[in-house]
Image 1 (tube, protein in one colour):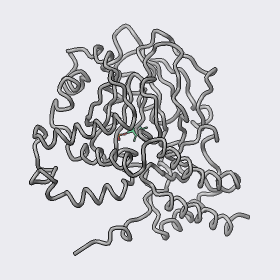
Image 2 (cartoon, rainbow, N blue to C red):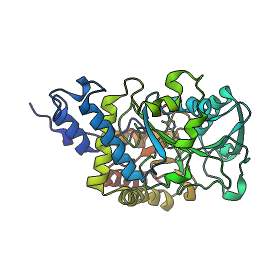
Image 3 (cartoon, helix red, strand yellow):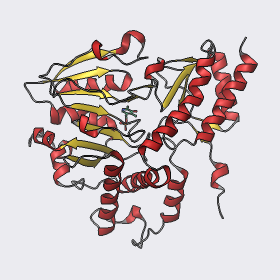
Image 4 (cartoon, rainbow, N blue to C red):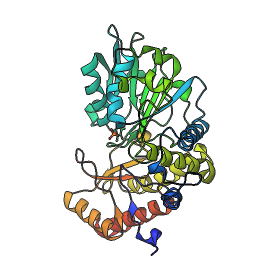
Length: 370
Ligand SMILES: *Cc1c(COP(=O)(O)O)cnc(C)c1O
């Protein structure tokens, strides 16, 4: 029996876990029962086997290549999702006589701050709540105390659809910590600007189960030996991500996604061009008729990953979602906390699928707009 994979697949606009590149899924399928050189499935081999260590080293090397990660940064493959990082970041980086600074550009940044507050002193350097998190601050609207242990930002707010278009610069030496869970690998970034970048994989970089942490080596010295073992970055660095059994299969798939970016997309600059073109398809429709499709984010800070907008009424929104479903599109309902429509168009989302959504938006508007 062979499955007609392509025609059975929906146009998946899910915010996460999200669509993976089809060639990656096909390779996983072909290697599932017996991976080359393993004589077994990757699901069945030891994390300390030569074969898995090669998979781990290969995934790291490809990520280092794509992101041009400097030699003085360590790459850790952890579990627990971004949520565990909300706690691990302050537990490791925030000393007893210091405080952590948070820039709040949406729901995820707020959740990160909540966890940091349980660990120690915090400061909010800017909060976009006044305008319901529809924008980022200008450089003159915020500053960070040079004594802060770190400054935490969220590069892409997945729920509101607000994203930093370029790497923010911090005026002093305060290490910049970035939750990049929903946009890691969407464009080249200057890793050297950051002290720590973390990302769960299941939005833009792979399957659920693995969380990437890229940390500047000197920051590992802050991890106190009294921390519980799993929560200590320096333990994971010392054991090269094999402190305990890592999420082996998820790491393998993440490595394949990195290879797809290198070999089929041609690197992150090319990926960025593709992402700009895809997002433009939808934002152009929004800009043509802001009274019908009202974008949530202000144009300068719009996300290339999560396009958020509302229709004039809840009824029209429900009708739109029903029509989208009848055209095999799924995952378009906005997050339960903000409503509206959210089209998540991560790296793996094909241009043609975004065009199909655009066509529905244009057609729906021509029938329903008064
Ligand atoms: C999804 C998401 C999270 C939470 O990730 P988990 O892996 O579920 O813990 C945190 N931050 C951002 C920006 C996200 O998009």
